[in-house]
Image (cartoon, rainbow, N blue to C red; front, side):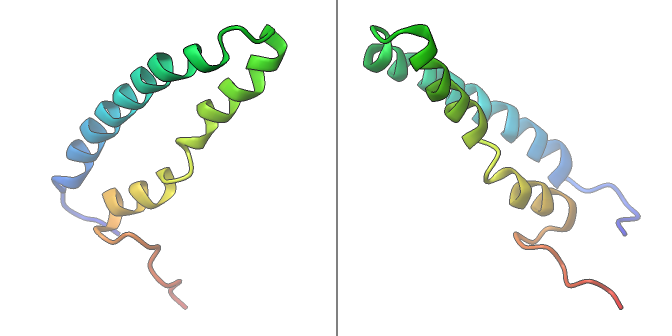
Length: 77
């Protein structure tokens, strides 16, 4: 358990907001020219994919913010 505040949490939150902003601008810039002529129902899975894919590295990032390591600590027995 963390007993004292750490710099990683506010830094991580700011980094996450910045990264998501850059990611969303990139998706909004580069995806529409590729699929803009498709029917809306065909575009939906593409945007769902890009809306969910950013979650993949989030677990390790949150672990780093909390522990300072990129992998979960071993379970205490």
